[in-house]
Length: 323
Image (tube, rainbow, N blue to C red; front, side, top):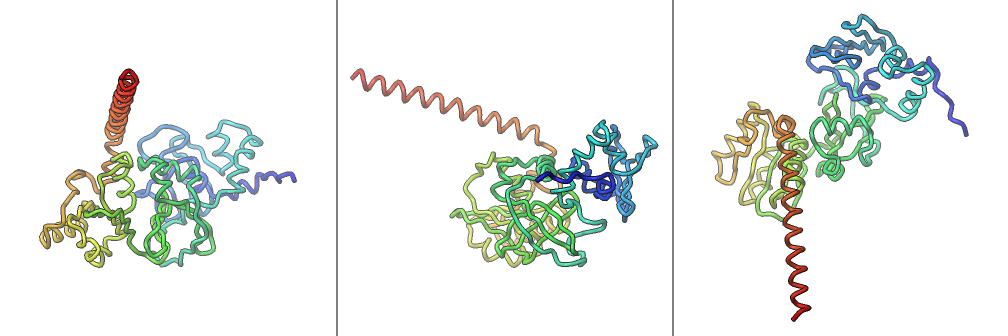
């Protein structure tokens, strides 16, 4: 059966904010207000956001170029193509892509409505894969611990990275949204170790795995998913000999770390490793080139050692045959 082609009018109904997200362009969170979303222009190079999308009217205007219009006008300039060629490009987005970035002003716990879980599967959305790349998390690590979660809010469908907690709920993240699907709870990963490593959020946990090339020292993991769960989690933490804290270096995280260290020698402050950053993921993004070189060097060393071992085994085998 032949697929019905998208029309110009249907294309104009596509949400510009969602479409820009699918292309890897996200609004400046500090400058965006109400229905006006500000971007670094996708059409040229600039350092200060001057490309505006009015989401209510679903139109854009590039103040640097002095041009604007609908998604059709943008697409022709961005892709440098004709209208028929653009409609073909938009066909897949129109048919298969639910919105990525929630409506303006949506924040965690905003009380706008209950988030309903629809489905979870392997991460395949180009926009979410780009988001992981921006946060310097390899796909191989994210695929083990996260899912692409489809959810519904106020009658509209969205998708985001989902990290499951121990009660069956999910922490949700995409470039424009931070929230959760109830019930909210911690995530404890029992590896049978005598010590536990504690993170405030799951991106810090994924960053830790990335830094250690997915081969961290033996430890159990506790991802709080909210600092509010710290006190409640003390019993499970204090069953371990050593408790390594990787909390945020904001006021709340620093106070929590300092109070814990005073209460027991079990608690160890590991946030000094990213003393100039808010959290471990921010440090990873800032130092990713160096981390990547270290990982490559480590892999090369392992290859050399394996080659040496193989040669030794081969020599021993030949000597055995000679005897």
